[in-house]
Amino acid sequence: MKLRLLALSFFIVLLSCSSDDGSEPVNENPNPEQPTEPVDKVMTQVEIIYHDDFHFKRSVAQYEDGKPVSSVTYDDNDNIMVTGTYTYNSSGYLTSIEALKADGTIDNTTQYQYDEQGRLTGYIQDGEEAYGALQTKYYTYNDDNTITCTRTSNTFVYVTTFFLNENGKIYSIKEEADNDDNEREDAEFNNQGYIVTVSRLGDYGVYHITNYNYNYNQEVKGGYLGKNNLYGGFNNNILRAESFNMDFLVLTSYPASYIQENGPDNYYDYEYHYNYIYEFDEYGYPTKVKKYSNGVYNTETIITYE
Image (cartoon, rainbow, N blue to C red; front, top):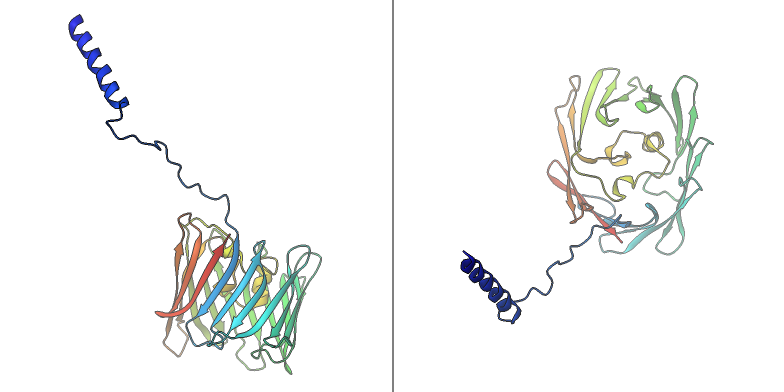
């Protein structure tokens, strides 16, 4: 038994020596370093390419601290159409946008006003006719849990009423027009506080219903979903857009799709599908978002980080 142990020990020594004499390949980096995930990637640019029939074909916005500070829109031939400069107050709310034409003259200016609670109180756009969007909006916060918006566009005056739920979020938007059909939009929220259904109703019933879907499984990284948080929160964004359009909402989960179909009281039979397709980098940050409308390539958004 001692002889066997001695022989075995001698064999192990020989094996060790054979590894030391250079006859076997040596792993010069036995513990290679794995790429480390960045603590946080900062969004610096958002480029949108319009594949549908838009009057401009590309826009590029530069970001600092998660907010756009400048933007440029281009035509079909990649010529500059308008350059925008953004200004914010000490609370981080957007207060003004100055849009300049390619020759440096002013195209239009937009100002946003807020009260001491950070609620949007005014939207004033002035300048040359910028795609028919020149208008003013003033918001009044009423004691009955409603917000009234008086909007003036050219010589026309419109009144819109926003209704707040028990959580202080806008859940209904009512448009008051001169004709007999006064329409409104009602939003339903899920337990996570997301809008999942929007119904458009009028004096003659339910006209159409929109169902929103989100990707709850994908971890949100980067500042892309906060790109519209310029007016100070959920209600301000709804007030500014005067709708529950998913593209204007401030979200914490990636929107996946929304489907709009005619309601039971609509005379027309239609259905619209809008889908978002995402691409992510190796760390899970969104780098590209493609939007389709009924299968037609609508827009492509490219997100750049530093």
